[in-house]
Amino acid sequence: MAPAGVAVGGYHQCRLADDSLGWCATPGTAYASAVDSVAVGFAAFANAPQATALGGFSRAYANQAVALGFNASAALAGATAVGANAYAYDVGAAALGTGAQALAASSVALGASAVADRANTVSVGSAGAERQITNVAAGTAGTDAVNLDQLNEVAEIAAETNKYFQASG
Image (cartoon, rainbow, N blue to C red):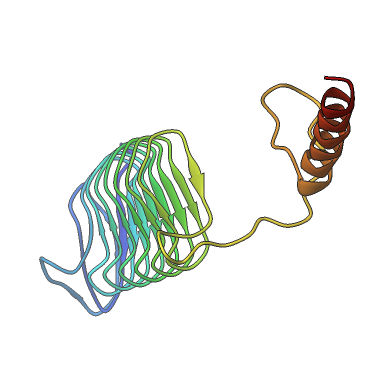
C-alpha cells in the first residue's frame, strides 16, 4: 500500500486514498491531498508532501510545512505556524504564538502578535509593541547576545578612560 494522506473532520476528503474519517467525504473541507500529508479539523488543508494542518481552517501549503491552531497558515517549505492566526510565509520561517507572523526566510516570530519581517532574524514583538528578553546569560563568543550587565561594565571602563584623558590631556 502506497503512503497516503490523512483527513479527519466533520467534513473531509483524502485524495491519495484512503484514510478518511468523519461523517461525509465532501470536497473543500478537511483535505489532505499529498503523500504523508495530514489535515485534522474543519476546513483544515494540507496539500503538499509531509504537510500537516491541525485545527479548524489551518493550512499547510508546502513540503514539510506545519500549521497548528485555528486559522494557522504555513506557506512555504519547512515553515511552521503554531497558534491561532499564526502565519509563517517563507521558507523555514517559524511563527509561534497567537497572531505571530514570520514573513521572511528563516525568520522566527516568538509570542503573540510578534512580527519577524527580515530574513534570519528572531523577533519577540513588533514595531510599536516591543518586548524585552529577560534572563539572558552573559555572552562568551563573538556572535552571542550581550546582556545589560556586560554593557554597563564596558560603559564604566569608557567613563574611567575618558576621565584619564581629560585630566592629562
